[in-house]
Each structure stands twice: as C-alpha cells, then as structure tokens.
Image (cartoon, rainbow, N blue to C red):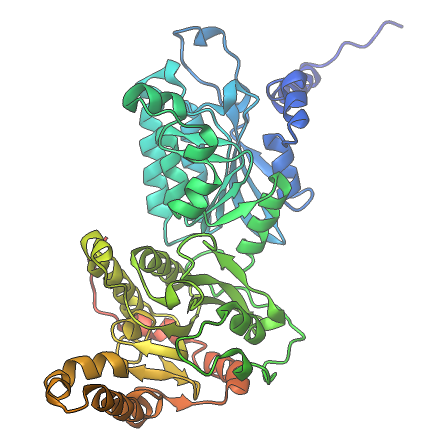
Length: 526
C-alpha cells in the first residue's frame, strides 16, 4: 500500500507550527547567543521568568509591519519586535509588552506601537496591572510618520489607563528619544544598573545638536535617573532582579482602582510593643537620628520597600504592611538636610501620595521636619509651587490618613507632612514631639526683638524669652489641648495604635469618595 496523503488540515497545522516556531526564534540563534553572552535574557525568556509557569497567553504574534521603503520590504521582523500578552504573576492576572532587541533592535515601528498601546487598553478594560519590558533602539526611522504617530497612540493609552490600573515600566535595555517619555508616564520605573538606559536623546544626538560630548552611562544611566532627576524608582542588578522587584512591588497593589490592596497573613503581632523606639530619639532636637530605624521597628516583619531611595533623601517614601495590610509610608529623614522639605522632596512625596490614594492604599507619616527650605535657590526655583503639591495631595486624598509626629513639626512642614486640618483621620505624637509654628530661637528674635535690644543684658533676656516660648509651645501638649493631636502616646505603643486606627478606617475610602464635590480634578500646581 502507498503512503496515505496528508489531509489539507494537517498541512495547515504543520504550516502554523512552522510559522510559530519561526516567530519564537525571534532574531535568530546568533542574536540570542549574543544576548546571553552579555548576561541578558531575551524578550520571551523574561516573560517565562516573570509569569507563573504555563499561564502566559500571547496576543498579536503574527502581526507584521507594512513598510515598503528603505529596504523594509525585505525585512522580516517576527511579532514586529514586541511580545504582548497576559498571564498570572503570583496568582493574579497581569498584562505585558516585552520589546525584543534581537529583532531590528526592538525598534518602535507603527505596528510595534499599535500592539503596545492595544495591550494597555486591554489591561485597562480587564482591570489588570500592566508591565512594560523596555529594550529598544528607539524609533524605526525607516517608517517615518507611520512609526512616529504610534507614539501618540501609546501616550494616549497610558494616560487613559492612569489611575485605573497600576503601570510599571522595566528598563532592561535602552529606551531613548521620544520613546523614553512613556516609561516616566507610568507609575513606577525599575532600571537595571548596567544595561538599562533612559534619556530624551542618546549621546550622538546630543553631540550633533548641542556639541556636548557625554557618555551613554553618564547621560542616561542610574546616576542620571535614580539620583539626579528622580525618574527611576528602583534600581536592579540584572534582568532577574528587575523582574523580582517588579513582582514584589505588584504585591502591594490592588489589580485596579476598584479593589482593595491584597492583604496577606503575617505572624507579626499587630499589638507588638516597640520598647526600644524611644532610645532612637536624641535628647537634643538638633541632633540627627535615622528614621529608617523607626519605620522598620514598627511595620510588619521589619520589611520596608523604599521608593526613590536615591533621590531627595530628606524625604522617605515606600511601602510596608501593618497586620498584613499594605500601606504607604511618607517620612522625613533628619539625617539629610535635617528633614526639611525642599522642591525635590515635595515632588517625590506628592506623586507617591497621589498614587496611594488612586489605588486605595492607606498612608502613614512619620514626622520630623523643621520647615520648608527657605533659601533663595529654593525660592527662585518655586518652592511655594512645588511645596503646595503636597498640600493638594493630602487635601485630595480619600484613603485612611494617619500621622505620627516623632519630633519636630514646625510651620508649613506641619501641613506638608499631614495634619488634622488638611485631612488626617488621626494624628498621634510622641512625648518627644515639638509641634509649634516656630522654634523658640526664631520666635524670640522676631516677637521680642525690640525688648531684647533695649535690655541691659540682651543675651540673658533672649535666653529667658526662648525658654518661656519653648516651655509654652515646644511640646505636643498645647496642640493636643486644642484637639489638633488626638493623643500623645508612648512610642512603644505606636504599632498597636496604627493597626487599631487602620481597622477603624477600613472602609473610609468608599464613603468619603461618594461625599466629594463633583469636579474633573483639582488644579494642582504642576
């Protein structure tokens, strides 16, 4: 008997498998080998590592570009240089777009951009977080305006999804030019320190247009983005560390703005006492201490995920848990600029507060700030405009808001770090707190200036007036007497009181949101 001829359907299936195998090979074995030599994963390997095994579903695998000029008619770019789809990360759905550098350097073409934007639209519609894995040589210039117009589609999609779903951008490779705008439009950016680069232009463009010679690392690396500009929130060692950090960050967030953050079980007693907290605070208000020690001794399991830790170090922002419940932390760091609030600290904290509010994450402040910065550089740089962003953020917030005044809470920083009148649900102070409009030294030099000047012994009278003023106001009790502070507490009880307060405020955001006046949004001082 002769061979039985294959049916047409079997041939079609074989053709499908052959086509899919070609797509899965991306830019080819040599290109993949080059990636591995550099210690980098491919776009598909990153997806395999990131998603729970067997849960990822790809979309748009067979999409092709339609360009037919400048040699593009002969270019085969599998999946048009970007892998898109959805799957589960630690049991919850997430959508991704992973750029493939092995295919024409992951360049951003018309269909590449369309797939990218469509993925975000899909994530928004489903109410699932979106993670972009950026690794691209930039705009595919051969496609001209067709490619450029896709940037607009992507920017619009990100804007429409903002505040509805969490968006995280991973800088695993280069991300330069107009394309570099989209990572900073997302909620968080995680950058790999030796291979991730973010910049409005690369060194060649900078030299051509401004004659400045500068390296890619200096222009677009970690120092530029995590330290100087505050555009990178977390720094990773390599691809896997970046993907792991993204998973950890996602664990604090709800899938969308209609859900509560996921609560986990913890063995850390919510009523645990912090018997050594008081010992952290120096006797003298002008002496520094490390606020990280305070935070870690109060939160669950001493675990605190800091955000923008290399930028504006006088302000601390990050995520922790209380009795398994995610919360955002905003705190002053007296070890840097005495914890004073400057332009960069204001921007850093305001953006963080707004994110937490958008996604129903309670906020807790740990306060030790002497003031907003008042020097001429800050004044001319717009400290009033930037500083008021904090006021907008706090006043607009609908989530549970709790303030712990550890030490200094002076002047405008009293509001910038959250107080009762601007919206705090509970304000607690330690006995070490100094809650006042001005410190005694400043007050004496203004209020009693004429009296001191005329005195027989000006310095003796100055010291007396300072002591009198501090005796009256340099403590938490005057504010507590007026009801501006709910209670003055023993530091060891801080964790228990925060947990009890969060329990009491469990459903605050549902009721408060409905009671807000109708408006599009507040006109924040951007």
